[in-house]
Image (cartoon, rainbow, N blue to C red; front, top):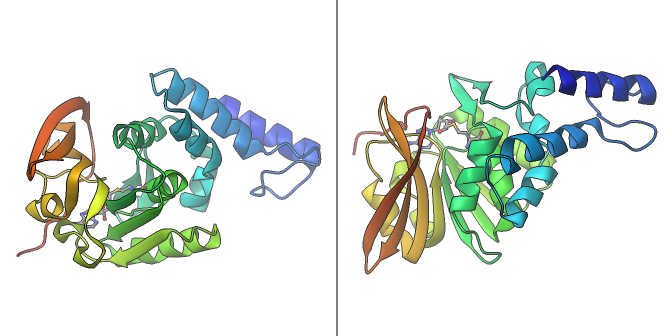
Amino acid sequence: MWRNVLVVFAALIIGNRPLMSGLTREGVDAFSEMRRQMVETQIQRRGIKDERVLNAMLKVPRHEFVPTVEKLLAYTDGPLPIGHGQTISQPYIVALMTELLHLEPRDKVFEVGTGSGYQAAVLAELAEEVYTIEILEPLYQHAKTTLEKLGYRNIHTRFGDGTKGWPEAAPFDKMIVTAAGIKVPEALVDQLKEGGRIVMPVGEEEQVLVVGEKRKGILQTHETIPVRFVPLVEEEK
Ligand code: SAH
C-alpha cells in the first residue's frame, strides 16, 4: 500500500497536478500504474488468466467508484467501505467472479447489488448489455451518476429488489449476485437462459462462491472458494 501512496505522490510532485487527476506532465497516469500493479500482484499472481478480464481490470478506474477519502486506497488488496454499511468487493474477487461467468461479447448480463457500480463497469467492458439493480436508494443514485459520468451507455440501472430479477429484460445469458443469500433465488433461475451461468456467494456466516449452469431447466451448481459478502436483503414476497 505505501508503495502505491508513494507512486501517487511522486507522480503529483513530478506533474504538479491537482491531487485526484492522477495525471503527470509526462502523461503517466498514477492510477493506471496502480491498476497495473493491482492486476499483476493481486489478480494474475492468484491465477486469473482470462486476457479480456485482465484488460477490463486494467481499464476501469476503480478510484472513481470509492468515496474521496478512500481514493488512495482504491487499488489495495481488499474490500473498501462505500457507505450505508456496504462495501466494494476486493479486486481479486471482482476478477474471479467475472472470469467464472465466461462472458461473451454479445451477452446480456444481470447483476444484483450495484453498490458502487464498479463490478457493473467491469462487466460492461466485456458484455453487450448489463442490467444492475440496487436495493439502497442512495447507492443506486450515486452509482447511476458515476456510471453516466464515465460514459457507460450499455449499463441499465434500477432501484429495487434484485431477488425478483428484472422480468422485462429477461432472459439473461449470465447473472452475478454480489451479496450472499441462503440459496439462488427462484426468480433468477427462471430468468436465466438455458445454458446460462450464474455466480453467487451462498451461505450465512460461512459462505462459498457458487457457480450454476442451467441445463434442461435445472440449475446445476458447484462450489468454488470460501468468500465473505454482505447479506442479500430479501423483501417479503
Ligand atoms: N457489486 C458492488 C458491491 C456490492 S455490495 C460493487 O461493485 O461495488 C452488495 C450490494 O448489494 C449492496 O450495495 C447492497 O445494498 C445490495 N443488495 C443487497 N440485497 C439486495 C437486493 N435484494 N437487491 C438489490 N441489491 C441488494
